[in-house]
Image 1 (cartoon, rainbow, N blue to C red):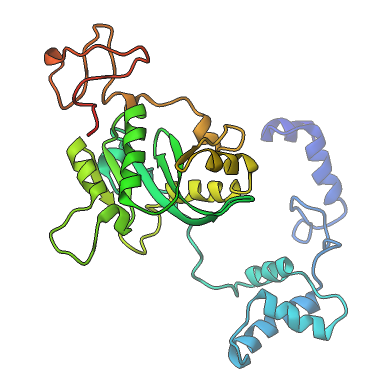
Image 2: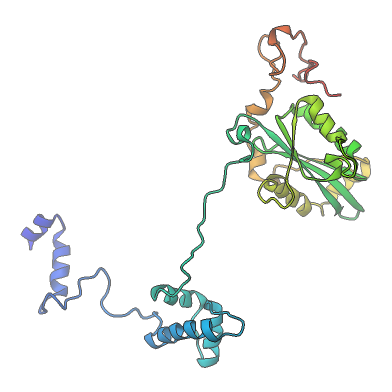
Length: 320
């Protein structure tokens, strides 16, 4: 046995184990599988397996509702025996006998962030997503409208409580955000009239769209009933709804008519606590030579000076 072990590069105990299992038997009926001989103690009995197979075929052909899945088979077995197998056991029996549906769901990897905008998907541009939460109930307070904002790559979030839905209020919030964080390459909205403007008048552009075009920001409007493009802002909206019962939020509303909600890092998603990415600040950063690096302007022609807060004060970053 030592020679056999050296020949097949296995241990002596392995050779001894298989010799003991086949000792006194012919090699053709000997069990040489990598498992214990016999049947597992918790395996579904053969009679129950045959009944599951029969019910699969019977329910497929004769069921009034057309239900012939694992739950329907389990419900039928509960009427026939005291202890019926679980749904998972029924599914395993069906898979063992090849009776499951041929078309299986294929899970594909998620597309990259901003897949519908090539520059954003490649990571060379940023997009700010905006949306309204209408009639949000604040703890011990009235119903309010919340304008939410979140950037796709930088995960910069904002939320403003407004007394009413209006383009004028939305424009002031957008100007405050972009004055603080810089201009993105794109701004994404839904088909609300607050963002798009009145739909009943042809050849008209809304106030929000005019602001974006004046600042060189490309407005992007999501098509109706299109899934996936609003996932970024809708996920942040869900967070705001969950935190709407906080008394701190109601105190902010009581102090001013238009309050900005600051989501704390403890309650914000993990992506909001990441370091701010440089691609947002690259649109108007300050270099060591105190020159403006705004892409739409010549760096040598800028003569503005940075403020005490390190913000750019050139006319390219000034909001109307």
